[in-house]
Length: 234
Image (cartoon, rainbow, N blue to C red; front, top):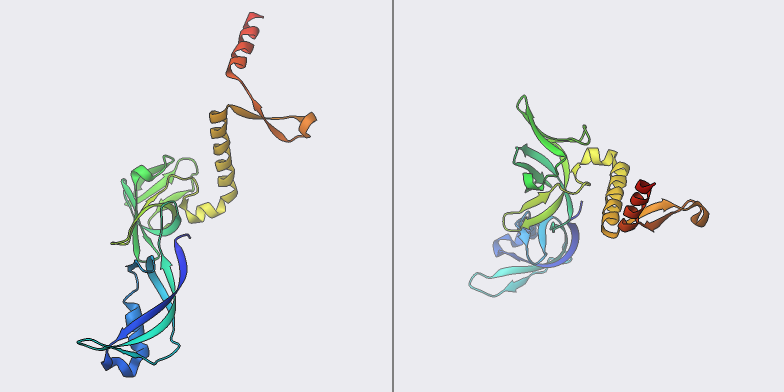
């Protein structure tokens, strides 16, 4: 999954003098306060940390209420999903207008019906709501499904992701992993069709010149029309 990264941070932890006898615990309390919040300094949401206290010697910081400043180095696990990144989450609610998910157990995400590709159709039966593919019968999205989707935007303040299911490589992770080759072939065929529409080129097999390799052959629309006219005249 994209959006995760590791960072090595040099931190100065402020500790109240009353905690001077339990500095290690005080450091953990301060680091815990960073968890699951977006931190502009680290450019991401802090998910985990691994502190390395090289020395417990503290510097007394001047002020009305003097604190102890302890320098530590910590490895941080950060999460910052950006547009077009691929992330995964668990579906927690399905409605006709949207799919709701939880990513990494803490970040909420939503995919609106306008961002769900046309092959998926909403169905509700016996109180169970599901998005079912009309192309692949076994490709379904329901509550509990681990789903792969593309990030559209990320609200750093409320830790909320807006996603999309439009690309063909998105959907139920379990189904996608079983049909990787099929999807790659489908995506390749789609790209070829687009290329033909844009350039007017089609692929033909030239056994003499290329020994069976595919080569682009430009087909002119005017030539096609003239051929049809000749056939009609005969």
